[in-house]
Length: 277
Ligand SMILES: Nc1nc2c(ncn2[C@@H]2O[C@H](COP(=O)(O)OP(=O)(O)OP(=O)(O)O)[C@@H](O)[C@H]2O)c(=O)[nH]1
Ligand SMILES: [Mg+2]
Figure 1: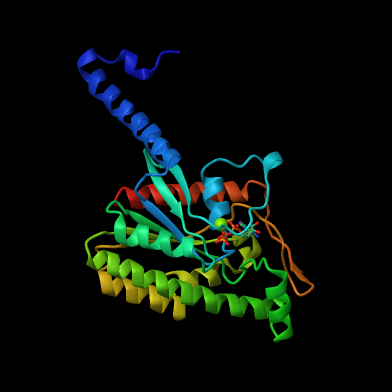
Figure 2: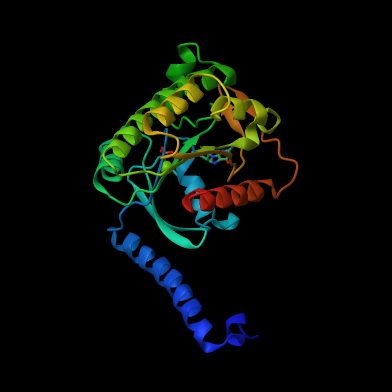
């Protein structure tokens, strides 16, 4: 079938073709930069260890086919990906959550070195953070963190500390004229708290209340809300049960395509903010 541009007069067709080529070249250029490891970060993905950064960016990337799916281990290096947002392809850098040298290098590179930082996706999970070390789990359980509610309280506190660190980096980068221009708080693992989605929104959204919102609003006041656009979006790329100290919480999805709907909404919002809306 003919492409609709075939029906246009040549004079009009030329700019359209150039525009389309530009987007295709941009896409492959970014993929090449990522491949050779030299692409300046456009979007940095932050958040605590086990919040779901790798899974979220892998799904967004369209890499996951269910039969090939393997649980990722804790990331030990920055993960660079070329992801298409709206019309353009951006270089995403996913910062490892563990306190390791690679994490410091990645944060420093994204916030202090690169001049093309457009946005931050900060991943949080309403306390359902995966603690991968069985030794750490045992220690916590012995110290009284022995229920899902208790580990969520513990995780939310750690999440807040991590967010405060990221806010300081953003404020400094903005003061130095480096951007970012937008931040998305990706509220991950929504499958585990679908019935409490409104409560989770109140915990993370600028119109809500509590320590997270205070930190976010302080950041907006520091950099000026006209300089930093902010969106808060629920996501659940890979529903799965959450287990702690013998207790188990199962995802409460109503339909199988719910994760895809959340991801579509996330992609749309990311396209909007990166277009200046
Ligand atoms: N319930 C649920 N679990 C999820 C979801 N997405 C990811 N997870 C789980 O969260 C855990 C951590 O995911 P990762 O993507 O490896 O986390 P990370 O933020 O990259 O962690 P680090 O690499 O250590 O910084 C994994 O066990 C995932 O299966 C989700 O949508 N729902
Ligand atoms: Mg990871």
